Length: 184
Image 1 (tube, helix red, strand yellow):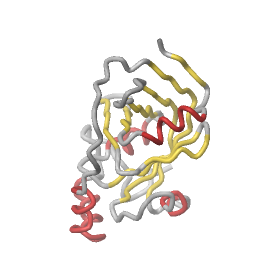
Image 2 (cartoon, helix red, strand yellow):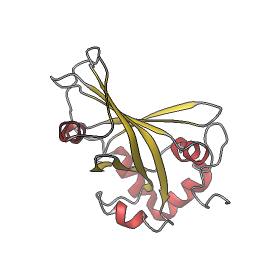
Image 3 (spheres, rainbow, N blue to C red):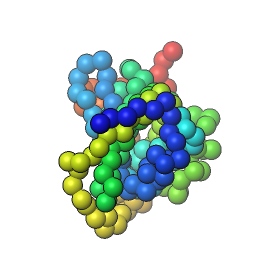
């Protein structure tokens, strides 16, 4: 049975901190819904209603494009270990790009990475747990180094070029504002 909370408690925060992967879901008013797996030590719980997570440069940039249209985000964790649980946080998120004032301070919460593309500062308005009985057992075998190596090989100029050629629009051709702020 699902249980809802107004905020994260210590038990739920510890559960999040033990997980090696989480999923982020966003959608614009039309087009595709995006669900992305995230890992690589990219998430911090800063309070009972606040999470930040750092988005590294990758093939798509759906989250930024969706949040520019509708400010809503769901994060989900699954317990793959002995205790079954699914945890979701629902809320809104502020998108911070490298050009934004708060980016450097929040980016300092994470290990250095030239691939840091955005930070999402998530405000939680509801938390929900459910049983997770259908989630399989899975063993954690370690982090992949492919993305980190790819970014290091590209270097800062290559990352900037990648943003320009591959990250400016979503798959539905909506702007992500990776290179320029949205016009107010």
